[in-house]
Amino acid sequence: MCGQNVIRSPMAEALARHYFGRSLYVASAGVRPGENDPFAEAALDEVGLTLGKHRPHTLDDLEDLNFDLIITLAPEAHHAALELTRRLPVEVEYWPTMDPTLAAGGSREQTMDAYRAMRDSLIDRIRDRFRYAAPARV
Image (cartoon, rainbow, N blue to C red; front, side, top):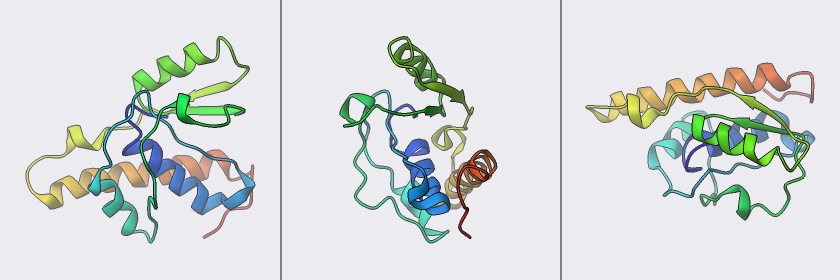
């Protein structure tokens, strides 16, 4: 879960699905919906993945809130998840994750570098967190 469900959380969803397939149920959401970000798609494309038909949405848009764990990637998402857990027995983990739009600047390559750094950080966190929960794929 992140702010607008356009960069961090949909990338994390695509990465988790890639590494852990159907052995984990994964869905992403934001505090509020935003607009798709072409740099997020480009950063995933570099590692052979895609956002597919992803459309930004909020937790209210998800059909199933029967999660065991919500991983938040932004402060506002963390606060929203903690509020949600007042009603639902869900564990929340906060993974502070850089917003690449704030670090990006200048040329397209500098912008892509910020997205790559965030993507690679998510890859490491996801693989480390779930490697014993499900069989990893290369």
